[in-house]
Length: 393
Image 1 (tube, rainbow, N blue to C red):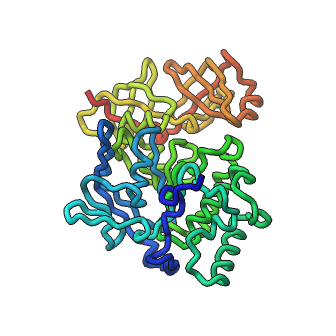
Image 2: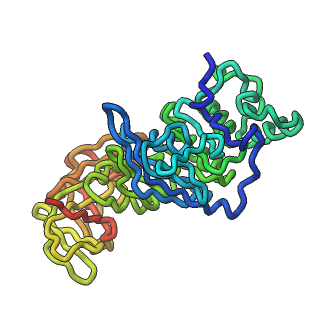
Image 3: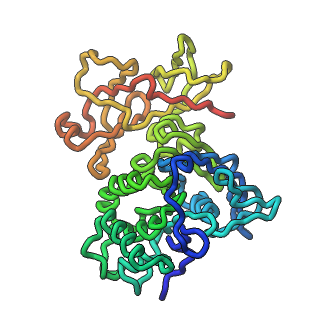
């Protein structure tokens, strides 16, 4: 069975008639994508994009959220594969969709590249012919040159004649990527590009994929529900929850500073504990959690705030067996190890510090500290790594 061209990377990146568009210029690298639209499904959810604005430079914007949150629907609306029911979508000075004027540009008019979750390679076409799909109107010499450059860029030399079923998952992914970018699209859309791969391959290809995208300098919007992929691949992060965009910003900032409790849960912040503010002074906030106190930064908390949630990422918890008190962090808690759980190359460590606290260490660090259940340690958390969310009642 042939793959459906409209559901694959063959959303033509070329302009009308299959002629490849010009290479994006420096000016196009700063094009701003703006969107406010709704897509309704009969007897199902409504996916809403409210005031989305992202600068389409050479970076990677990640649409992040749980399965079913609406990420793929948003991506397909950007590609022109689905039509929103209301609102507008603009790419720079171009209007791609506007319900008020009944404007809707077809996928080929938008000059985007699209890679679906299952890659949708044509099973009867070789690597070379999959990548060259839709270049038929180019002169043969130019087509051959373009395909050869793409195959070399992707490291697929020697595989040109193979069919998709003869390739590994990582190789299939690169073929799909090559087919999507061969026309030098103005925007590249990737739907869960690593989800079809096994865990070791997925881990290895994260870095490879980012490097490939960086080399081509094509603005990219990528969908994932894997936070490690989001952190490894993204520059900008857009959080979706129940069909709505709920937070957007630089990846590290959003992961470190979730806007509310729901976002903290989506981001899987390991430690979230209710607390009560004792004092706000000199830019610092003192909070009681159980019978312990923590100190965090005052991140413009409302003056009358009393109840908060204390959020601490496991990667920001330092464990030491040195009880001498020579280290600098303000937050220092004698801790008892309650459980150690291997998670790939890392170990999740459940601690009792008078309140539950999660740390994450390498296996080697655990061995060097001889950590085991009921071991004693000192947990350290720097003040900027204590994030406070107002407790809404």
